[in-house]
Length: 335
Image (cartoon, rainbow, N blue to C red):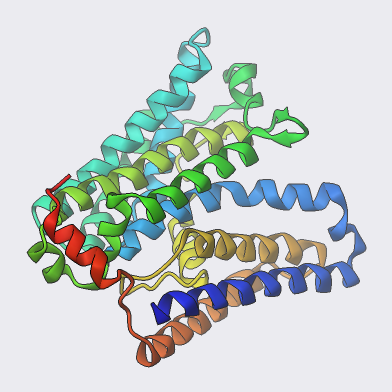
């Protein structure tokens, strides 16, 4: 459990760094500390947070999902095309269709990785290109602009409930559900076991192929939901939606302490990593710093996080599950 305690300490430090960074930017540009600015910062981070908390599950199993942004783009484009061609369809149905598309694309990854045993990076690199190509094929390369979408379709993400945007409410619900899954369900605990010792996980009866199948499905489901939210929020759908965003999602996970080698990480870490990147992305324009420095800063932070992770792995055990829980898993039937 030493590594888990280390992660908790690291999350506290990361949280303090975020507060310090916000305060530092505020000294240079006081407008950054305004309620409106901080509200926009939180709203801007929601899609990244939602994708990062499900990518966390994938990384914990020693995997990676490089297709998440392409999945988002395809799901978003399909929801925009559906809404533009059938404007009278209920919004809920359109959202469910986007989530179903994302789930189906994620389960393709899950089947190839879980049941066929193919390398995650190779599979998702391939499906990333396929899904991105399908965006162009299905849309014919055309844009779907705001005047082609129903007003309710566009308005939903930024509409407010109790003074808080729907985007923030949805992200909060997603984080709460993922935290519960990771902490209190057999599914979540099995993923940590798979990431720590895959052979031992199979030995004690954990259905690894099934767990991987649904883990990538969960990542795809979230990409589908974010596909609709992305298109509706920015009121445009085009072939290069979220191009390269998969690397930002992975960066948020790494910065948040999710071990790229698997077996360690928390939902709160993924959230904090996302907020850290959101602060940087929002602070640079206000401080009139060239956006080209954004990639350089993100790269430096990622390399630092990786070095810290590697150092912590040498100093502490990577066992996340207590022995009693392993014994309990060995005695229970597969779920």
